[in-house]
Amino acid sequence: MPPSAIEVLSPTHSEWSTFEEPHKTSQITIKSTVSRIETRHAFTIDGLLRQRALEAFESPIISYPTSGTDYVDYTFGQLDVYAHRVAEKYRKIIPQRLSSSEPETVVGLLGPSDFDYFISILALAKLGHTVLFLSTRISAAAYTSLLLSTGAKHLLIAPAFQDIAVKIKESCDQLKIHDITSSDSYEFLIRDGPIDTNLCKHLQPEIESKKISWIIHSSGSTGLPKPIYQTHSAALKNYANNLNMRGFITLPLYHAHGVSSVFRAIHAKKQIYIYNAKLPLTSQNLLDTMHKFNIEIFYGVPYALKLLGDSPDGIKALAKLDIVMFGGSACPE
Image 1 (spheres, rainbow, N blue to C red):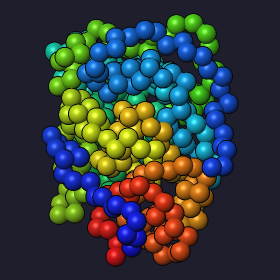
Image 2 (cartoon, one colour):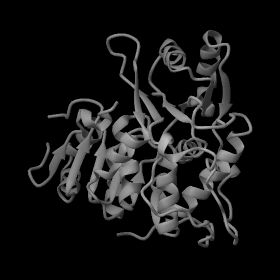
Image 3 (cartoon, rainbow, N blue to C red):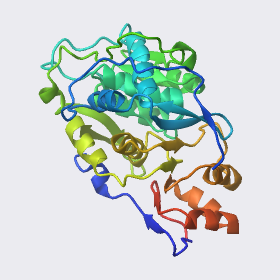
């Protein structure tokens, strides 16, 4: 590994420099009902999403499995409307800022990198909040340190993290903990009529562009993890620097390279397949997806490369790709 026919790339520090088998489409009937928004360049993450929904409402962009490797396509329009529905729910428990002069509200996000998790990222962006991405693999003490050091007042968690949330609450008594909204609350018919998904009209885009969009954190391998901040403008500049290829990703979305890769796909309007967070990472599961779809670029953890590199079929699948990228640790031999 790697085969000489492909180019293997590792993300650099600039990731956060300032900091053909037919498959399903979603069963939801949609029509282009999004309201008109300005077509100038986006100032924020949500501005990018709304702009893409305006330009390509019914174009598939994110594919995520309902089970196994049974993928469903979701369009730009669906992402925008789903995120709006979830944002409307969250803003009842996490108030929005009244003006751009107020500091950002930091909201922690803890859960597996599934479709609900991704929609919650978009929903929090719609509300003008800062998302603190929390690894699923660190200690209660590490979570507490990150939440306190970033001033987070709210934490969204998936059901599997209820026990760790109780431990976090013991040290962060002011922290409000909420469940990540599930698909039964947002994944339903998009009806005819104008849908205005901009929930931040009262905020000033130019000022918002300099606000913090995401906070990731260091690994904490030499102590407690440290937060790393990224503004909307820095993030959008990062996403514009994309390879314009149809992708497949196994990286977790709390990983800098993971979340950046997905938003680069959104920026480029190139469909990306997100690995099922409930599925064990095996060579066969990876190959099932790579054989079904026309994948050009693979974003993987090094272990995924090792799994594929250990079999002739895996090496053949990698050799068909234009580019392979990895992140998280060193590339296996």
